Image 1 (tube, rainbow, N blue to C red):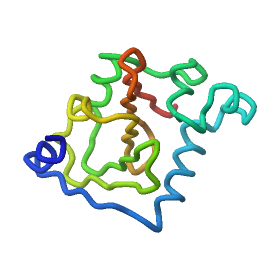
Image 2: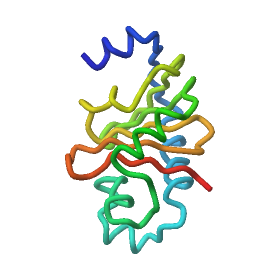
Image 3: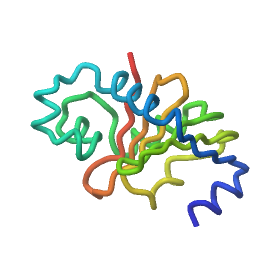
Image 4: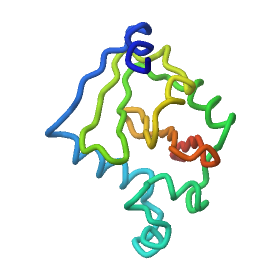
Length: 135
């Protein structure tokens, strides 16, 4: 259903292999740059990057405010990563994608290719979604 919905919206999905590790590292360096390695260990960041939001170590919007902020962003081209998958997906022609499109997904991180914002939908119903914009 998720893939069909994206297809119906005209979204083109490509999986990156070689570039994925570098993009994931850049996500960490951009969105979690102010969080020390010690704090990351305490909040189990390596298990779930979104713990930086649920443990309130990074300011962010949550719930409907997060959804609204994501929906308002230009989303022509996006990066999409899953917590436990080593590959990054590129969504092209994604302007019609909305937060609700990811409600069936777990531990998914969506972000623009300029790394100015990220939207996270977790597997925990009481955690998130989260939206963070670099200041």
